[in-house]
Length: 319
Image (cartoon, rainbow, N blue to C red):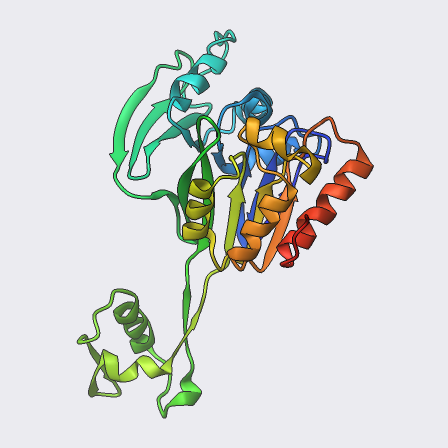
């Protein structure tokens, strides 16, 4: 299960840390100037996910870099078109004569469009970009526990919304049959996962077609977590959000303005309380959390904004 933590206060630039149960690496979403992000958080990060590189989402990358120098690990950075050169430019603003090769390696996955991702590597001391490959699918990151899909939203520039999808788990329920456990259980799970129902499964010397044993398996659906940052509250963006995030377990969504400031939201390609709450309602998200508020708001304003969001998320509307 995903265990997200907000590392920014309500009046700070947005930053989140995503953990998983029984899983050591952590994952950073957005690089806003967040006072709660610790040195350990940065050093344990296996990947960084950036929606776009407006200053309030990218300003704190320098601090994360500072903490990661010397960890001697590869860190993946995912973001929109242009991010490879932007990361390089930030890094090359400093002097690196005392840093050795291998102290950290960044693999940058630059999302060109919905089906094309360019991969680069960059490391000290020269920090030269090397293109190392291309991904031609809608999965920007994955490991043994989960994968990350994405869609591109309109914020007057492309901005990346990420869906973290934990892999389903397959377990055997021996009480559904008259068999004892053994090596065949793993073979049965493999046949199910690889969609090879005709595989032969041998149990106590007897041969069974895998498909005839699938009723012994229980499938636990993987947990889902959405991160939707800056986007215009328009039909095109909302259609993309519904296509990717419908039925999601939990979503953090940008709600930059109050309802009374809807005109500012539309002019600046930002979402506002009612629009964000309404699209989460339409997506039937189990738990939706508004984040990333305009810094012009005080605590009372944010409380009002949050209440407007909750009303719309619950299916109510304002006039």
